[in-house]
Image 1: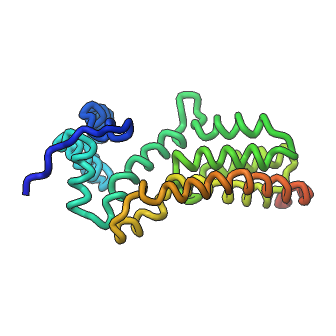
Image 2: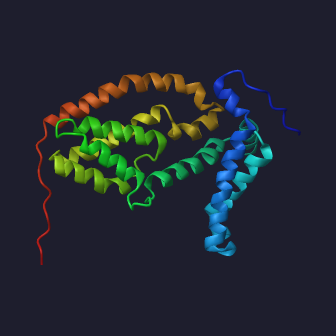
Image 3: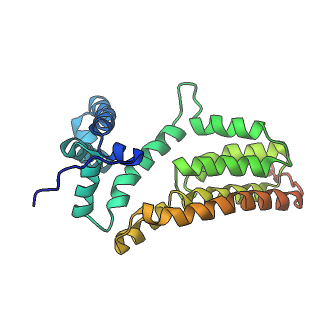
Length: 239
């Protein structure tokens, strides 16, 4: 069956959905990365990676469908129950790699961000500053806490230098990292696929919860943090 002809949107968000240049830009950036992989790793090694294989067909699909809305509709018809996961998570992975990969100076963007926020904090304001940082980064990299393994050394070092409770620093990071899930509900994608809904159908309800929970959660993180005393980490005895 021939797919329906693209219809131009009437709202700003819909204009992007029917803009061919968006597909071209994304496919060009993806193509540049693919060329880099094939040149430096060799064709046989590069194509052997399942990530490269999937990414190649994802970029081809973007070009062949020409418009973002046409591409999304095609994916939804092909795999209706998991279309959101298949399209969104490769982009999440790319964003995570950009933020966590070392730059030319050796440090990653995440390290620079952590340093910026934590150096601007005091022992009393550390829960609020770190909570805001974790929430903002969690919006762009919704990992469900997975990025903690990369950021833990820098976050805990800052908490130790500011003499903030180390256990509470972990809880602050985890609690605030869950806040952006109310705006970007990636955890709900399988359920939306089963029910035949889209994120926009529930975003209005979750954004209201986000607006209520952000000040409340940050306030409680700050308040409870004042009740906990700093205990320096116990260093293992030297042999």
